[in-house]
Image 1: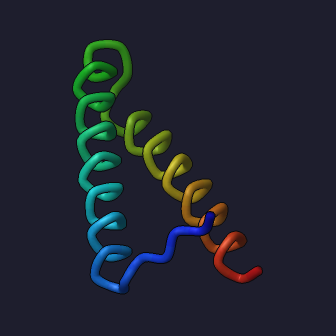
Image 2 (image 1 turned 180 degrees about the vertical axis):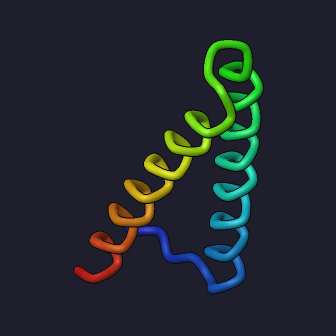
Amino acid sequence: MFLTFSASMKAGFWMLGAVFSFSLMAISGRELGGELNSFEIMLWRSLAGIVIVLALHGNLIR
């Protein structure tokens, strides 16, 4: 059985995913703040974001 979602439901799921990922990044940044300096934290956050965007981009092209 395949589920079909309306455009507004898909948008809602994307928003929930964004809120979850922003919260996860904020929590991980605070936890790493004692061990790494701010430039290192920003480097790792940026690299993680690039990997996620490339994965989503590759999935959406197909």
